[in-house]
Length: 314
Image (cartoon, rainbow, N blue to C red):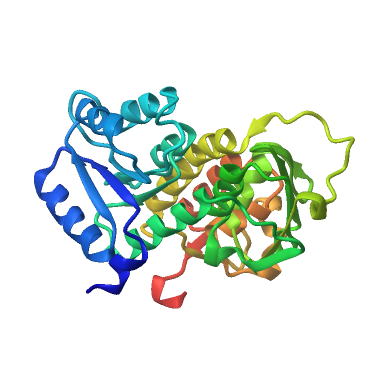
């Protein structure tokens, strides 16, 4: 007997995917891991199954004909009988904007094809744990923001709806949340979405998170201007745009060397002692708007006033 099957026979997972081969592969892997799979090749077929089967989680493909994954997600969340079922998106799209769109519609997580089976099962188990009644977590949780990713950390907090304070000392930053909303985002002298954009580009150093009463949220904060998912959705598009611009250098985030004569741009040259710097670090520490900074740095690279070091130098 497979011991994993004995430990979790009650979890039924519905796979919504129009690809029969994908259905068979996923279903077999779920069975071997101890879950009970159900199969639907369309939105309509899925709702027929959901009316008569209790489901613990849904695996939902985005690219489907007639009714795609985003439309199916909307129907699931609009129906009071299915709105609380956790959903994990399966997507071949690697753009953050589209991933965040799925989360904004109510998905609990996503995984990009082709995926590792072990990672998929780990994400399924993590969602099932999160959907269980939360346990109190007093005190601070600490870690490396590069290891977890700020976007992922905020997504988890947004899904929980808990009040929290995130401190990012290496980025001179602080984020305060409550009820799935962002009450404060500060990075140095920047606030709001411009601060969040810098966090998502720079994303280095340690973080600590405190929850609920331990977060000590000030009572005089102004009303929230952005939900967590709304802010991530907006900034994800900007991050994708900036990363696409960076790719014109031939590298994803090149390490930059300043020419001996400098760049001729005061906002860049004031950081001369810190070079070599990665492109994203430089545009994040400059004082202007991120997109303006990016334009200045790329222009200096084009004019050979800043040089990209070979990737082997990194």
